View 1 (cartoon, helix red, strand yellow):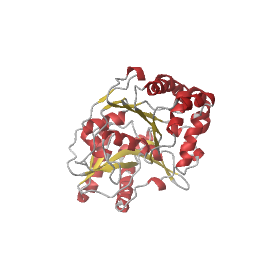
View 2: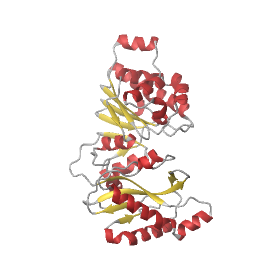
View 3: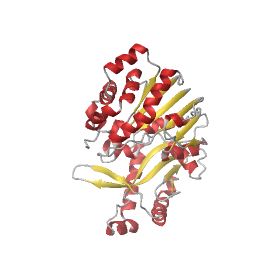
View 4: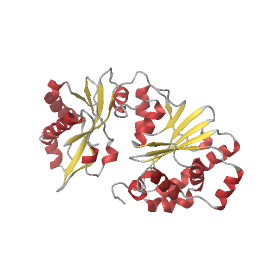
Length: 353
């Protein structure tokens, strides 16, 4: 059996937190040490990993918008779709930053905001849709040459490096400025500001593309509780089962991919210890016993995901790992160095604790 195990979050943890978790992540560390350097480095983070597992090929972007639109009940046809998340920008003295996405918008306010945008862009054949108050899409008829970044990558950072790029980017940046002016003046936003609620003064454009008719095969069995993964799979027509509580509850047959819940800063040490007991240690035993032929460990964060191919270690190598235990913090730092990024910058790209 081949197992893909996705662990979201460790690459976003401060080095101090990873170091404090070393003693609780011994099996995790031994598996990474047995794998060596990453076999794949996704510079688009876990967004790319989701698409790979579902057989969605990269275009200029990883084209998740048309599949999410399909999951929301729209027919993407051959049009080009972008996610257009309602967002709040903060203007500082020297830069503009993405403060966050707006998730408390009433549906009637969302529809009122989009009505203004649709009226303004009607002559450009640009159309906005809002299946829910917090999930917006924008559709154009022809494919665009755009490279975008998901909002979680840009949160709290100066925006210049995260704006759309590519041959068609100048037009979209101009349109985005027009969107911001229209939204800023809208009565719904004035009411939100008077109520001390974050305004919708921008949209974050990302995940653009068209439905690729010649797509790859998804992983045979996928287990995940990740909302974005499940929505994307539904649009793709792929069944996703709930993630088991531990490795022993996973059916051992064929090929399986398990997407674990993300590890956040607040409870990272306890979560890493729990994952080590319930997944990494039994996975290591199954590999050594021959019940697993190979394990692909995907360790992810906002901006990168490392894929490690783990096979059964020799007895001598397992013995050496027991005598001189590898450390998770050192192994991940070494993987960052392999990518040419300083570990302290990669673990915490915006200098946040």
